[in-house]
Image 1 (spheres, rainbow, N blue to C red):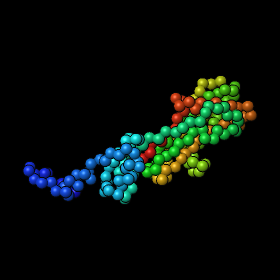
Image 2: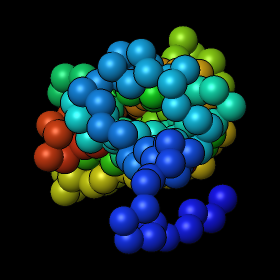
Image 3: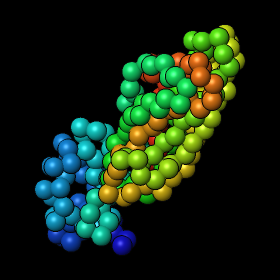
Length: 196
């Protein structure tokens, strides 16, 4: 609704002041502080939470993210995988509530600790080994340099929030093959750009 200019020396009416109040971005300390005022603000109100520096929009009585959000995963430890061996929970990530879909990118540095060619597969699932978000494979040569496996995928996420987990498996098919997995944050990272 359009609000007329205030005329000089005029008394400001409560309807005018309340309309302005409803258009101001509210600042809250955290989600609990914001939620304690949900009933007092109208749908369409914008608010920020200081603890996580995020912008929210009230819609249909609930607070939803107003901007995309970049989530980061937590890596497991470095390991060497024998033929057929699976590295479960190589990476984990908790996706916050309020988002509809995400663009996932998982990069993992793999190396050749044995004198054999190798092949590895990375898979990203919703938590609990649920739905497959994406998968990628990488080959490496005996005594070759380290290579980066990159998995990229778009996924419709659970609006209530959910977790995701990554696995890596040595799928070479040769008895003595070994795949080295470097999970140092400098080399390996799971990121998700989440869209409200």
